[in-house]
Image 1: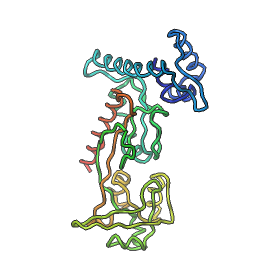
Image 2: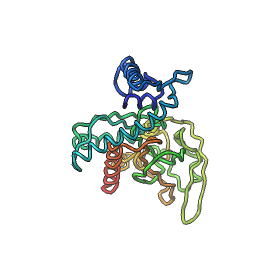
Image 3: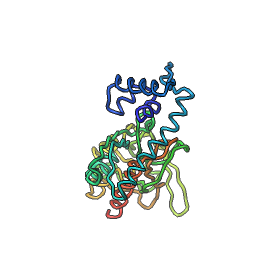
Image 4: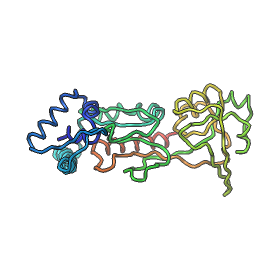
Length: 291
């Protein structure tokens, strides 16, 4: 049943096999045996991949509920202190995960020794269903209003540069001064920066010579004294603490940035996914309070 659900969610035997860590022939054989047992065709092949038949769709919808209820029943039977088990697939932006999630993972795995975790690192939003993701950590505004999401934390955005760059180019005193600076732009974000102070709003459009598709590129460029950027405190936490980068225009504020736990739509979040989201929420907020 779980194999069939994975095939429907990923759209192919090969994708389901990757998620389940099985060979494709084993997945195909399992589905064939299931169809033989039920004496009904569940899947149809097309140029778009595998699509469930009407009977297959009904089976899929009920199977999702059954698998969720089985997991919840097992946890209830073991008691409130039961360890989670099985495999959890998480996706997160590379830099945020490297700085704030992966260092905390040993505590989570120690608390649940029967649990395995796959961490998919990608700065771009990925297809949660197609990749078999249980929970995704995303930052900023969620473009898809149909997502099932829970806000975990919030932090400030800052204008950040290295001391060496500021010594060479000067410190901007107003948002308008940014036009004379080398700005490092994250290509996945709007290049118009909105500043506020004492009820006054100022918009600044920047056209940096260097654009980056991943936050790790922005970090490296700032630390290489290439220019200044706007980033969350999460992105430069260690460097802000030890002085390797500095925040400028601190008397102006920028919109805060939110961290979200995003769950696949169309089904309940698993107990493993909820537990992980709660763990990240506590870890990130405790780190922010201590900072």
